[in-house]
Amino acid sequence: MKYRLSLLAGLALACTATVRPARLNDANAVAKSASALESRELAPQAFAQAEKLRMKAAQAADEGKTPMAEMKADRAIAAYAHAQVLARIVKAEQRLVAAKSELAQIESDNLALEGRQVTVAAELASLSTQAQVEREAEAIAEAKASTPDREAARATAARSALSQARLLCVCAVLADGDAKAAEGILASISDLAASLEKKPSPSILVDALKLRSSCQEQLTLARRPNRLSEPTSDESDRLFLELSGGGYSPVRDDRGIVVILSRSDLTGKLSELARFAVEHGRSSILGVVHSERATRQRDDAPTMDALKKAFVDAGVKAVRIESAGSTLPLESGRSTKASHKNDRVEIVFVTRT
Image: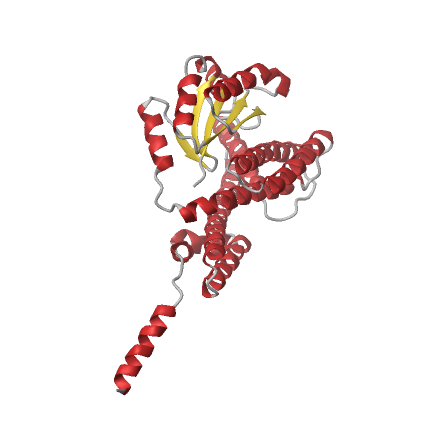
């Protein structure tokens, strides 16, 4: 009798045990990976922030708050990735220091190596600029005033971050997210962009990155109800395969499924893309006009009007067209190839899962 009672009690306890979300298990696995352990040494602040988020996710799971635990776990995984990027930047800086030391040795050893010294100096300058932009783009502390070159690089990175933030917040609205919250962030983005063009402060990049993070969070929150209600939906996968079969070479990013076209390729293709959008009516459309050089929105107005008309006339209800100017180039430089790639239009099928 006692054995049966004990068995029943054990079964009851097992039935009431909290099932930990799969995303929390994923976060735990990421925390134990080799790249995460490396970031703990090279980027301790960012790693600590990721650990804090993971602990909060575990606490929410223990309290039975599964949706909150999944959201915190997602943010923890993103934070670990952020820490890993910072670790790579630190390693790049270490390589830069070593390269500069090598250059100094070459200069002191033999003037006959002047030709080689010039080459190395050019390589170092390129590496220094690249490391500088990456370091500023992933800044986690308040920035201080620096040299004009560094301030210019910081301003360029801030413009890029603000463009990314704006597009993410627009996608959050199109995905039926909290429109009021997203529009509030968009207003802050516009204010910061205006400040950037007048007299940017040293903290402008940090502020831009925070706004981008806020927009990413809004998009995640907008998609969460659909992901919970339809965890096995393959709608976006089917759309991706159909676009691939149509020869559009789609790609995925945080916004959804993206088709990239040159402006000269728009004629004849917009109607077919609009058909895809109608057939997959749950995908809202974001059109983004990019330019090879800085432009005013009114310069892109004819292209933007053509995009909106094509999708609205086809019956797509949720359409938004934005101009990103030259803030998000695919390639740098003044070559014909770079110009061709940067002067483009992105058709984004904003997925809701």
